[in-house]
Length: 338
Picture 1 (cartoon, rainbow, N blue to C red):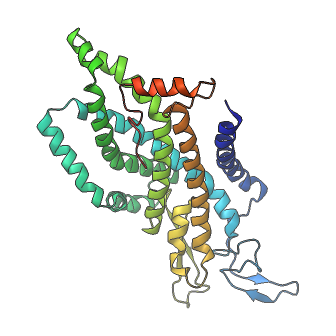
Picture 2 (cartoon, one colour):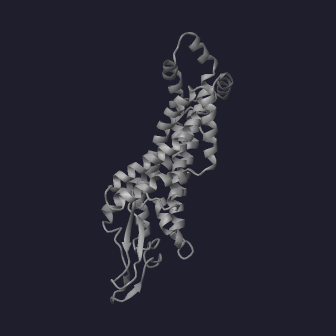
Picture 3 (tube, rainbow, N blue to C red):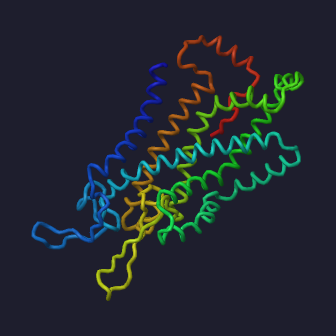
């Protein structure tokens, strides 16, 4: 692999992996990183600040409304955010491919109906549909009937299932184009059935592009997590902290994410954007870094697997152009265009 391509992939991958490793180490290094602090005291025992604390009072980014170190919370929640995006992207690929296979072999009139239905949903934010389906589960989680880890897994599966048909229709249309190639028609003439065509031709072609498609879906999953977080949908569920200091004080509940996932962190602090913008802007910056890394990885993978920039061989430009001119199948097959 050329050093340029290796560097283009290794740097963003190392950033993502480092965030995940640090996220697992935060509870070990700082066992009380999520401890709620109602106030800060100086050396003489006098109250000097109430949450949310400023960066000067609690380095390096201050605290949230519960007085917890905001930087440590974001690092601890990185593993849930990144793993959620990876898991959703993987399930979307799997469910989308299964949906696409059935879609590509459906009768034409049914396919046109599903395509029109899928195109209409492009104008409806999928986050709203996911939110409406997952809201009833909140009633099961809040009383404690549903453990947080099970709730987290159910949420990811529902998100993937709801968003998979749109990807499946796109893949199905690409499969139809691929199945109309001349060599596929020749295989059918020679007696190849649908199962053989799918196993010999369709599946290898899809797997060749699935790595690039997967990295693209991770970016889309991260974008969806931001939308769900703004709608106060917390992966893993919400917890409530009561800030009433006595029975005579009015109730002052503060909601926060159980997993400290970044999207939910944004939603929990969106009301403080004018008084303490760091509580919203910093998680968005973390999202931006991960999305930038994934886009960089996607760009490099596209060059390797789709644009015939072979990593292990040095091919002359003339030979590459000849191969491009003789290729009968689109190089963008099964790959979402940006």
